[in-house]
Length: 178
Length: 274
Image (cartoon, rainbow over all chains, first blue to last red; front, side, top):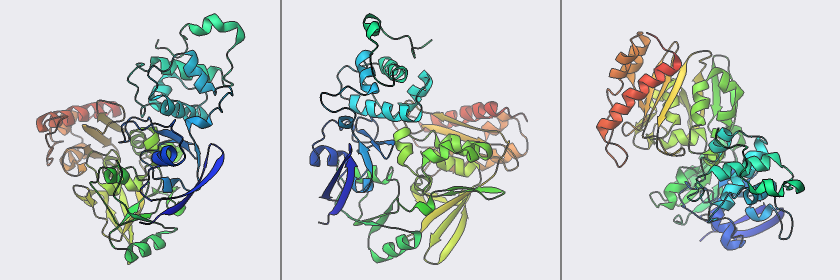
């Protein structure tokens, strides 16, 4: 059985492995690199739980062969903030606005939201919902995810304003349906 | 789900890709992989060798050629969707590209890949048909040009033969002409249960999604449009020649009903008056 050499930069670190051509990027990340933050959900490119950022664009890693990512730069959920370091703005937004319940969709959701804010730092509610077409969440009803993205857009450094402790626990009115 | 094992080779140019195909038995071309990889994962398709054409950058472009715009086959949906040149001259194409799947799919999938897959439920073939596109097919013997109306020959089968590649798609400019795309589905990223693409102007075209085994050009309705018939008369003949199937989403009768209703809606959206 043939293998190919795959070199990719994952979360800033160059990784090189011999892999079978049929290995999917999500399995390469989870099983070879042991970066298990990226989830396998539907495994049919519907749910978006496996979303990672490849060369600046959100992709469903269950539908990309690892070999197709050769030479690319990948960011996974683990790459957004090192352990003990402050969360990224989107991660903090999900924390502030309760953008998750069970958490299974969250890594993919956060990567799709991160890609969105990279292209459009101040999206409207409609733009957020359109950009998240490819990510399913069965817990939140999406409203709190939309609020989380708006929080991140309004706090691009991810820092919670000190004076707004009480206010931050109340649902944001920004981005909510009008 | 994991595909059956295969060998992988990477093509660096169109000529190289064609040479690799000649060299390897039982090989397939891999572009963005968003039709092929899911089918391989489901083991509906297997192949001994995948020839990756996804890195042939010479096939990714959107060029103004005077009376038409040429789009390289490996141009990703995302680039088609966001092109200001297409927005100005071919609004239908740019809009339909933005209706494919979801952002992650559009970041990987390619225009040529979607057309060559020939899925009757896909969005982009309807735009190619309604716009009267021409397909440039390259093989060992050179290139030939096939009109979109002759391109989709059977279920998941196109005019592209073994050892050939779709390399470019040419769209006549439709600057200032009305267009609309009405897609009926239940979740945002789903395939259409039925969709209707309408392009007005000098050679008006109506094409239907998921109304039979191939993407369908509604020739009677397009002729009615060219003759200036009322919208209701156009809708009355829109399902002529279709062979929609029954499945879990819809019966044939319901699909025909949808095609008529969506045609009326699309024409209303363009402001069409007979």
